[in-house]
Image 1 (cartoon, one colour):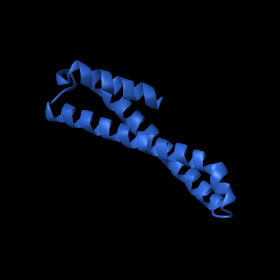
Image 2 (spheres, one colour):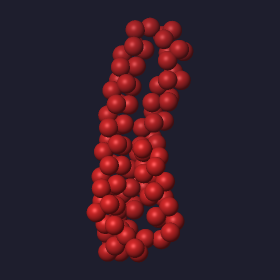
Image 3 (cartoon, one colour):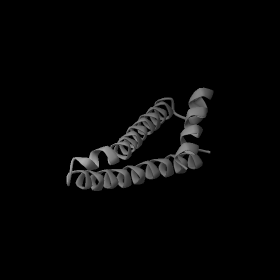
Length: 97
């Protein structure tokens, strides 16, 4: 079970990091596009907001993962996580996939 959990945590973290890199790249490209003229802000603002929202969501996912890993390590084992912690972890993994 521990190996499976570690593998899932690593996969979730990799997915979060890949999503963050892609979103940061797209947001950077969008910023360049918007700098050309002020008219582009009206058309591109909602897209930029979605990119920022995606980054905020990945921050929340990282915090959840860090909290769960901390609890797991400080309590010396996955079996000591509460049912709520386990549900949050598996919800997070499903969300990342």
